[in-house]
Image (cartoon, rainbow, N blue to C red; front, side):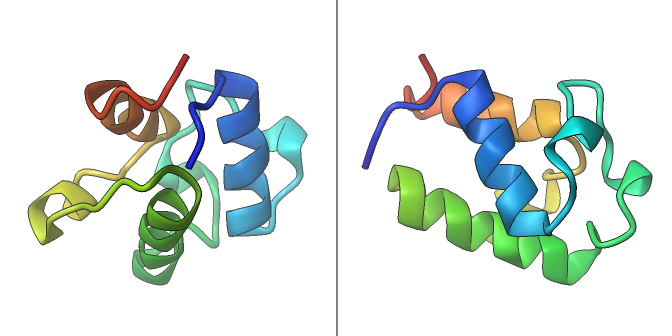
Length: 81
């Protein structure tokens, strides 16, 4: 379990969502990425747990609607440099 940089996180999200890394930025919202649906959120939740040791409640998972929301989750968990 590591501490991420924003670039590391964007790389991991790109792999997780199977989208080109260039399509992701801090401004990216779920509606901007076709695959970022409810199953995409599940994939992100699993990635956060696997890569950063962050466990989320269903309420927290429901808030994953943007890259910035994922950044905020990792910052709150002190997993983002």
